[in-house]
Image (tube, one colour):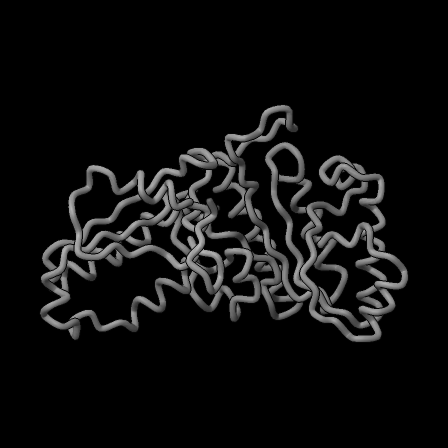
Length: 279
């Protein structure tokens, strides 16, 4: 939520019921930038309501969707510093890159981050994390996994995610996967499984991580494991997250890859507790 349209009655109810922590999208602390990005003259009200609720004891996990040329670079640094100054009730801040589909006719001009911009963003945030760690005992601000993958940098160590407070925003999912992988003993797989022909389908972004899984499976003696990095035909090639692949994308990616005994996909492709794909 942005809080922009929250009524006085709704704010009183949040305080009365102590609905905390709340997850809020901020995007910028600059009134002009907020108004431009959120397309509303009420954008500044959201920030004022955030400050009011903080004073009433409500805590928050915040999110900023970074858009190159809008709220990146110096504007990003200013926003991060402004939000950290709001105190300990702002428990964490997630920075995620804008995701763009191919369906953008007539919309505002936006573009994805370049690899160099992703690298520069990482350097800027790492510098701020060091300052915050000394000041409040927490890094406070965390970057989405996509930035490290785009910049071809190593994923931060598990300790740097401080318990994964922003996991739902994709912050630390790669590291969590890598840590869980360490705990699996593939040597104990039954011989029948080791003889199977296995296909694993993933999105383009997670391909480097899944390569590590395939290597582990091959080393454990599996005869045939094939990793398929599916292109997103539905939303466009700039959308690389596994969870945004559709059933159509899945079928298209498997064409011409040969037969298999089993195909593994991420549960993120399906609606929670159902067998429905996005399409």
